[in-house]
Amino acid sequence: MADEENKNEPTALEESLKAAQAAKEAEEKAAADAAAAPEATEEESSETQTEEAPAEDPVDVVADVISVVEVEPVIDEHGRSYATGKRKDAVARVWIKPGSGKVVVNGRDQKVYFARPVLRMLLRQPFEAAERKDHYDVMATVKGGGLSGQAGAVRHGISKALTYFEPGLRPALKKGGFLTRDSRVVERKKYGRKKARRSFQFSKR
Image 1: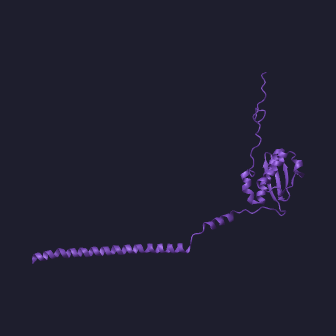
Image 2 (image 1 turned 180 degrees about the vertical axis):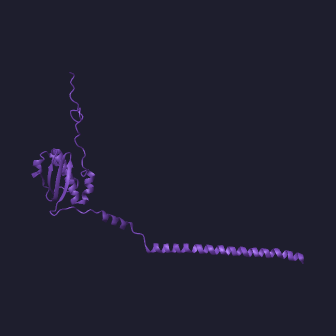
Image 3 (image 1 turned 180 degrees about the horizontal axis):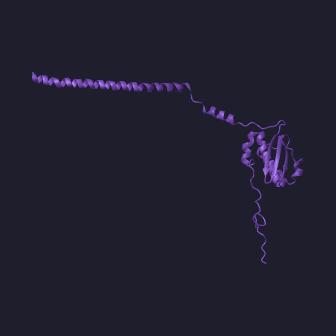
């Protein structure tokens, strides 16, 4: 009988250990479920938000950006666009308006003021690049420099004025380099030299 009681004691201890282990596992499972519940609710809320707010169409976004970038024409009360052009020491004030292609410089016709055909060719270049030949009348006043510099200044002013009247012409004129102010100027004279770089004539005696 004593042997049987000794055999029953370990079984009771094992049962108590198993019960304690089962209770511990149940507590861990409950804690894990409680921790997983908020994550699930957050995922559900994020899903509902994404469903409620669909992604914007890229085409619409690009259209909005383009609409913001669009430039309005700059035209005065007389229907003209004004710009200032520069080249070397010459400065030109230029006004353009729709017309037949007449160009007046300092109150004189271009053929009288710029007698050389090369200089008149410079004035035509912006219109030819923008495909607007004989579409605008030009009135310009220019001072400083020589005829070559003045022609370049008027061309620069015409190019800028075209972009103000028709902003859509800017890419074509920019590609041709008509909107860039030519920074080349006469180099200054240095002391000890006859000109910027030329030396004085050598004299042996």
